[in-house]
Length: 192
Image 1 (cartoon, rainbow, N blue to C red):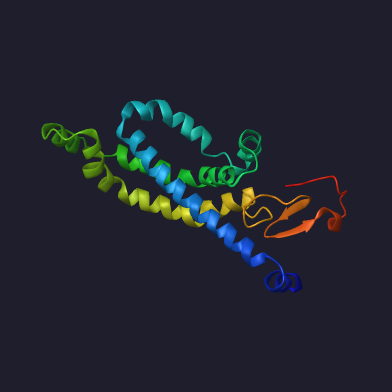
Image 2 (image 1 turned 90 degrees about the vertical axis):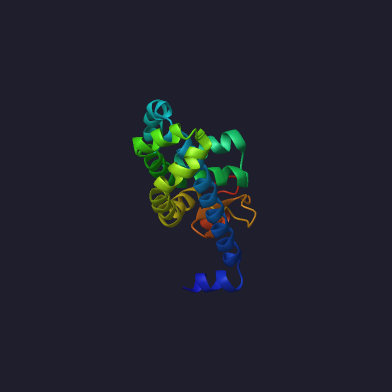
């Protein structure tokens, strides 16, 4: 309790918490937008579902933290990389219900749209989106409340600074950070 009070009054716990919440919200927004757009594209096309659903189902159970080393190797320790990892963890509860919602459009509605010469984009907006909206909202709420926190916690959103980049010689322990020297590690080791 003493450390919590110290972090709130004299430390940077409040700034790190705000930074973490900010990343969660941005990750959720990115996952929602990407999940709805990509889900609509895949859900409207039977051919896209045939080719992409096995790959999506294969990638869905991957924890976001497994992509962290790959993200660091390819993009470095940047806030954009971290945002992408968080969005990857939060996109699945939006993407898969959106695909389901768009793929379960009544075939008679497709015939009506074809007879009225409604294009694919207008069909997706006028017929697909209202059909998929209950699934999209349910998935979006799940992403906001469950997967965002899991992805954020597994990737360690608050990496030492409000900017999101790690300070040298820090160990991630939730929202608290201890220097390696204080934790008993040699000064030349960096754990993130």
